[in-house]
Length: 202
Image 1 (cartoon, rainbow, N blue to C red):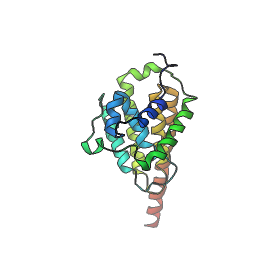
Image 2: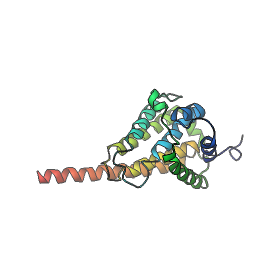
Image 3: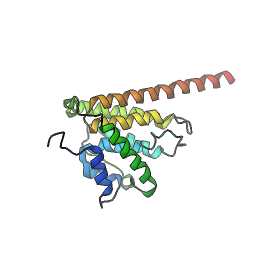
Image 4: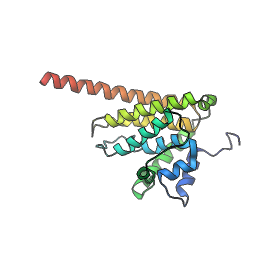
């Protein structure tokens, strides 16, 4: 099937959300196979990417994301998850509004995205680098001070990178990496200011 006729990521997600199967993390990984790595990153980090302070409520999502990223780094083709996380509900009533908003954003990005440098995505080294970048950005979001909103940019970087990989668009993936890098730099810079202020007080 040509790229022009292939279903888009948003179409596939909408079909999955509208299906009768359980909307769990385990079901997603079984259905999408190797592509589920990028999908998991997009879905789990969408909530931390919202420009609102989460107060650490998203830490479990970030921990799962880091576990999945490590598996990608070491070369796994299928995601392994503990049974408890396998049953993690992705489309609960409380998350339906978020998922609908995410689908709209994905459709908007798909208007500008197209396959670029697709051969790069076939290499294991690229997948490992993808996992390493996602791990670093997610760790930065995890370590961001609660209620600061500083986890937004690193998380958004993960989401955009994931969409770039799903669309096989190296430009979109690199844009996500830049967004995430700005977020990490912001976290480090403000963290350094806090340490210096504390030292001055003491």
